[in-house]
Image (cartoon, rainbow, N blue to C red; front, side):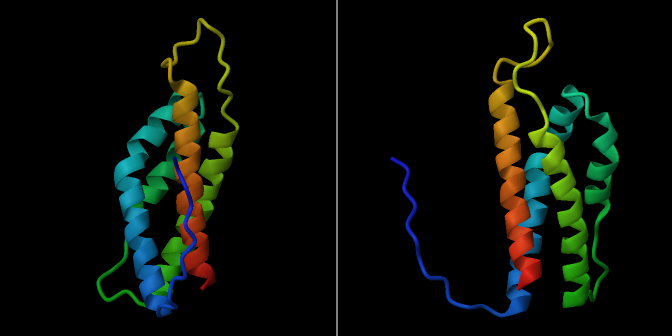
Amino acid sequence: MNSIIRTHIADVPHGQILDAALVRFGAYLDAEAESLEKLLALAGHVDVEKNLADLLDLHLEPGATLQDVRALLENALKTLETLAVRTRAIPTDFAPEAVVPPDFDAWVRWSGARLADICATLRHAVAA
């Protein structure tokens, strides 16, 4: 059984929140970018390839400040939100003759949920 246990999380310095969000964003890209690109291409959303390329091109220079990290996360968030909208628009009831994997609907839901998670993380970090 899945359950949610609410816990209190102590306040942490803003820099740590931004750093944690940056690490999570990097982990998200490593784990999900290729899958998301394939999903969007399969669904006919090839026009978002630039969005994915923009995400993968984001980087920080050595000696980046907290403002630089915040700006990078804000830019990433805008792009991720665009991708989330496009992912939510993917129909999961393709015609039987369409060439999609049998678990396509689960793939769409999984990708959408992961996008929602990373967007929430970045939103929280840049709002702090």
